[in-house]
Image (cartoon, rainbow, N blue to C red):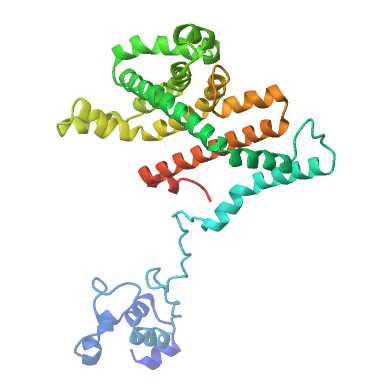
Amino acid sequence: MTLEGVAQAPPTPTEGAAAASPAATSSAASPPIAASPAVTSSATAPPIAASPIATSSATASGIAASPAVTSPAAAPPGELEPPRYLGSRRRRPAVSTAVRVAVPLLLVAAWWYGTGSGAISPDVLAGPGAVLGALGELIATGQLGDYLLASARRAGLGVLAGGGIGLLLGVVAGLSALGEELIDPTMQMKRAVPFLALVPLFISWFGVEETFKVVLIAVAAVGPMYAYSYLGVRGVDRKTVEAARGFGLTGPRLVLGVVIPTALPNILMALRICLSVSLTGLIAAEQIGATEGIGYLVTLAQQYYRSDYMVLCVLIYAVLGLLIDLAIRSVERLAMPWRGHVAVR
């Protein structure tokens, strides 16, 4: 059948299929088509590829050519959304410092305005000018340095003794079931007893000299250190300990090399609380039988009803607490640099 006959008469299904399929054409009648890649067999040619010759043959035969199907892989890729930044964005030091001091400066400004405007009586709360005058007096006489050194020595010795004992007991109770049974009940009873209730008993045992003051601060510091150390040791992954034992670490090497470094976040938190509690114990200890120290200065201010010195002592304790916190934060930043990535900025 000629091409004109196909155009005039509707093709039979067999003829239409033969005309639409390039593979049905004889290779002897049309050698160029047989040599073209478009007439490869349907088993080897991809079903999506459409040959121009096959399209022209289907059009000439009166069969409507279906639109080409586009493969998803062949489609141009869309614009990808940039991934979110998963790292930590640290603020600039100046911005961070400004945020930290904003609230204290607002409190100082409110204090200054309240006392300067007369809304707060000087007998109730001394103004910043009077407090600065008291600070100048202590600096001029040299008593401020002596009092600070005396208080720092007592607090340091007490925290060192109490913190060391609490750390040792917490590690033993955390690692050993027998140690927990022997130590934990006694420590829980000790935590329930306020350390200030032991002041009269300690005075009868140690007198009012330096030993009494150091022991009182140590007793105040041993409780938080034990509790947090015990919690940190119990939180150590068992698989980590077993892996360390597989490498031959046992006894003190295992404790110092694996257990304590893993429990270091809890231990540093305990140290921060111990230093804060030591200031409370320091006030109580230096108000009895002391001739120097910040607590002794509080007693003198109370006896002579000097509100400016009272406020000055409160500010000194506040500054000491801030310095302690900054020191512990610095140790945490050096010992555990990965903890900074957890904070949300």
